[in-house]
Image (tube, rainbow, N blue to C red):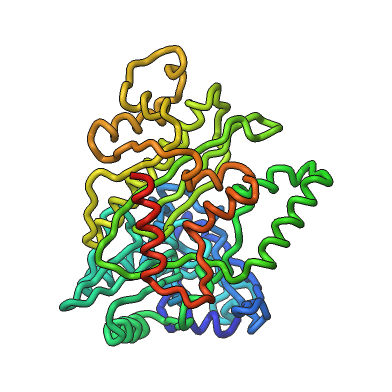
Length: 419
């Protein structure tokens, strides 16, 4: 707790003043937490003084609260606030000489509603003054070009990931950040956002039945763990290359959920031969036909492709019409012929932008036979032979002596088969 208050003094967070008339200072509270290391072991005990932000009133204590989603120590203490905010003295550390005084904040305090926004504004201002350019789509992405080298910085509140094509440029940025802010360099990226990667249970097929699971669901989970145990050598392969193309695959089952009778959308996006994005998600509405289910899945894949296209433009990558491969001819006909009829007029308008972007030339709908639909693996369980065959176009044995040419030739052969 003493160290926390020393950080406040070092960062000039507040001043002890007489409370102004009609002032209702915000309370403070000590929060204790065990700081864990990379292996999950407790490395130190942590005390944080937070403001009871639930007492704040909009328009009086704060205006804006939004903040876009290296680890910066005490990051929120670096953000300046524009409003006059008063907080009570920390419990157990009241001034013996001035017990009735309150602290007037200069900078944001943990727990304040505007704290994340204040920190983001401070960090963004520093990066822009340092020559960085903010991403046109992702406002937490910053890029710096220096000669022929590029430095990329991605931030999420107080977590910062950076990398570049020059080791000297990366080291210089790390030193610059440590001089400006109190930083703790965590080395090479092993944990993202201070957390070990964990699968999202909201999109797991077996998780749908965890509230009322049966023996069949338990056997399915055992089968999943058995598969993971005996295939540790498989992994995604990301290779460098000057020629990059963007394409997407979309598919859907029909009423695959036995409880709600909703369909599952499966999509995946490739940058050349590298799988960079994928999704397996239950649709929010019940589809009345396979055409509708496939159409909703294609619209979801289209939105992801357009976002990737806009984001990659910040890296000077330009794409023309993006191929979107679906195995439903009726879905393609609906997109190419937007005349309403009884089978499609009820589809929500939010999915109709697929037609709009097809007519604009942003995407190119291509039919693919079901046997070659890579997104089919994300929609439903497949028989062993089909599963292994589709898996072979995305996962390779990374422990074997596979060279870049082998993978690229296999992918080139697959694309030629589609065309």
